[in-house]
Length: 149
Image (tube, rainbow, N blue to C red; front, top):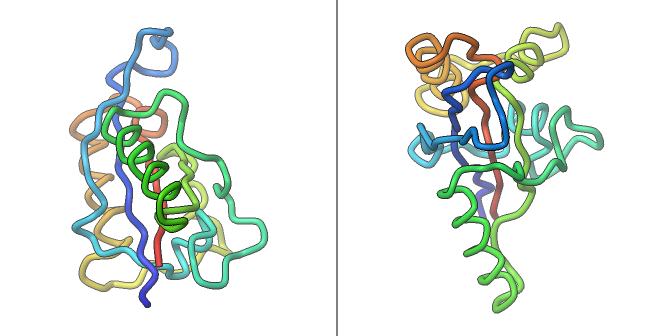
């Protein structure tokens, strides 16, 4: 059975300095069409792979408490499904865009393959979104992910 990773890129229109309790995140990009799987990047960043790293950089964080409605709804639906069937999505975690960019720039980071789709397309697309939407993309964008068999 294939291992798949999905989730959302979320956007907050306020910079970190401008945020208060009423600032909100918006869903801007579903990861579903990118056909992500438990590859080296998913494993390195989030520990989402068949044989996960013991200490992924951004693993085990859960969904953000201030996540978007679409992420919250998917998470709650998965909880209901799990209670009924004891199966479903797992490994919910997240990272800010700045954290991801810094991690991918490290010497030990896996190479981004020049494949169609996958993480290279997510990284390219999110970079463009950040340049068009944000004054501070590193803290105004984040990726929320989870996995399934």
